[in-house]
Image 1 (cartoon, one colour):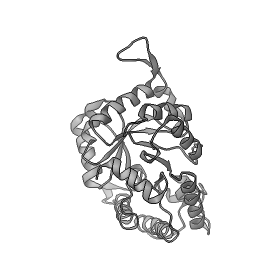
Image 2 (cartoon, helix red, strand yellow):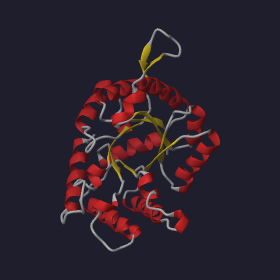
Image 3 (tube, one colour):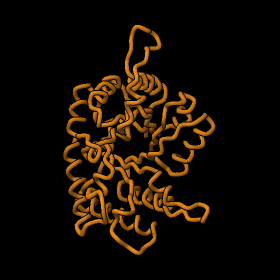
Image 4 (cartoon, one colour):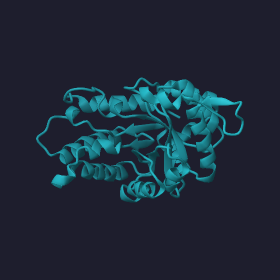
Amino acid sequence: MSYIDKLRESAESVGNIVCMGLDPVMDVLPESDASVRERLNSYFSEIFHRMRLEGLAPAAFKPNIGYYAMLDKPRDEDFSGSLALADILDMLETFFPGIPVILDSKRGDIARSSGNYASEAFEGWGADAVTVSPYMGHDSVFPFAYPDKGVYILARTSNPGAKEFQNEVVLDRVDEKVMYPLYHAVALTIARWASEHPGLGAVVGATSPDELEDIASVFAGRDVPMLIPGVGSQGGSASEVIARMNKAGYDLKLSRINSSSGLTHPWKKGAAPDNWLDQVMDAVRKLTEEAAV
């Protein structure tokens, strides 16, 4: 099944376009004397079991590899974080079959190195999609264009510093009388690449709704997926995201609206409260209802 088909089918099966980020912060997990791997396994197992019991499911999951790699101590032969990520990916296959998993690793290097990173994501971790930086051009991106896999290319990100480069004005490569922001030029290039390599898409932050609508307009009528972080703790609104995409004529089922800490630990700071699992379920339920399709 192509990645585009997988996106549409998963959105239809669960009735929403939510992507649940799985970015654990050890300080906010329930207190325990167990090992890192055991704590993470227990935490996410409880969440996934309860979601299944309550009939809750997002249309994608997105673990950020940095949250797991930082728990490893390779020189001490300790790979607790990576092993926990492997366990969580196994759980996702069991609890949520058919739901895409996006490995958020933001790779992008010279061609041979990109090929290695692509093998890591798709063959090593078994991910359905990966995030990639476009800064080095097509030869750093195309090695990720595996058959039936997704590639989300950074276009207009959700972080405060994004505008320092992404909103810089550039000349059109064909008509030098036409000028637009760099993120728009990246979106045009992604649309062109996606026509040759199906599954290529864009990361577009919910925190910049005008830019989001602009990019969605570029992709309207095309099979170009969008991964939209920034909803929840970063201040983005799922309802506004959907309104902007509808206005642009973009196919909602190709998008995934991501929230990470706002779903997995909505209390933000301090050890998990006694009702932590109820808070997680309430947050997941609220976003899946808000982002229903």
